[in-house]
Amino acid sequence: MGKTGYADSRFFRIMITLVTSVFGGLVFKLLHIPIPWMLGAMIAVLIGSNVWKGYYEWPGQIRNAGMIIVGYTIGLSMTAAALREMGRQLPMMLLMAILLMTVCSGIAWSVSRLSDTDFKTALLGSVPGGLNQILILAEETDGVDITVVTVTQVIRLMMIVLCIPLLIFSPIFHQTHGTAAMVGSAATAPAATAVTAGSVAWNGSLWTLCVFALVSVACAWAGGKIKLPTAFLLGPVIGTAALQMGGLPGPALPAVMTDAAQLMVGAYVGLLLKPQQLPNKLRTLSLAIGSGLLLVLGALGLAALLSLLQPITKPTALLSLAPGGMDQMGIIANEIHADLSMVAGYQLFRNFFILFAVPPLIRMLFKIKPGRVMKQGMRSR
Image: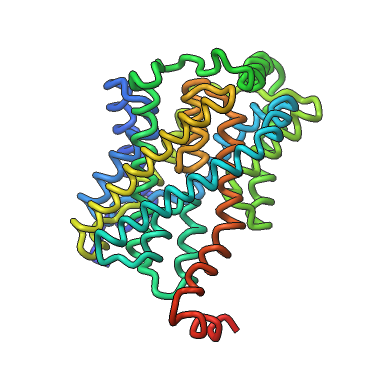
């Protein structure tokens, strides 16, 4: 209520966020930092929104538009051969999801032992699921500190988005900007073929692009109606894959559109973190950052294991198992020409695993604690 003048205008706040995001993206681009339009926008908006409070806004609809673009790009890699490969990978996907959840549980136990945070709050803060679904689960679980879960989840997401590109382009992976990460991996050939074929189709009619755009938007809307997880990402993936399976090749998007998608997603993530809402700020931030780093290390170890067990490259393995959002990992995978279908498959499987298997397991775990069985049993009736 204290804002006056232009700050009262929603359009003004959105434009401030846009200008800040573009500035951050340009700075990161000039510094040759990987994924500049997502990371630059995220960091610039994070700083700006906490310095000039109340002057930043980024509608969810803009972020959703960016996710539709990313979903379409991922959908281009979903060829028949890629889907068959994903089917063969299902047992390994289940194993990796269980191992990652085991790592998260160990981190949560350590955090609860090192602080006065209860195990339930620490566990829900560490589970690498979608932010919305984890917050809903936290709200439905008795005795959980929602603020701590929110901040821990947001910091975890931001650390993944920051650390994974730095790891991918570090000497550990010998990856350079734009280098195909598919070399030596038969599983990645479908993704490369899809993108190449799409590049040719871009020279064709505008009608094809309009068809894919309409189908992507329609599938995103339908996914939201049926409560599909990450509907604005997964819907376009399904719609684009279905059109391609039907014999209509999709055009690859120009770089300016994928850059714009990075900015749309990055600005939204940058606005999520609000340190002023934290109780015991230093302790909570320290534990959140520490658990985030441990989660990155755990994903790195699992990626090394996956690349040994399966014929995929280390960058593809890390992006497949990184406990971040499928949209952010898809952006990075597209940037380095990793196997988008494999990354999307593993990320999607983990999202469904967390969506359907984790909530009942967590509720069961908390209910069987001594002294709580009868109390929570009565509340559930």
